[in-house]
Image (tube, rainbow, N blue to C red; front, side):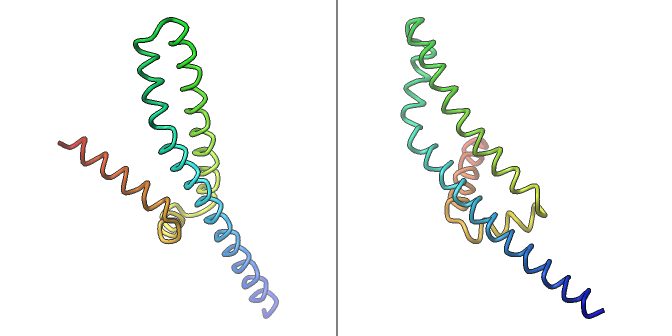
Length: 119
């Protein structure tokens, strides 16, 4: 019986450490996503204008660049989703918001955009 309790304690400790390291990784990815979004926003707006109103060459080049930006964001989102799937969603999300400033800021930004949509 002592062996079972000992094994359970070790598994719990390892699982907790795994979640901590995954939260750290998710925070890094979230920070990268937020940074990419903020840094690329002016470029994305300019590219969208070229894609809509530019010459055929400008449209093609702008669409290609916009696709690259979108792909990078999707790759980060997929990595985040893969990490999140390993854990209880509510528990992991709560821990991520508690420990990751970038996740908190993205959540606030999302809520602000939702509020704007309600106007």
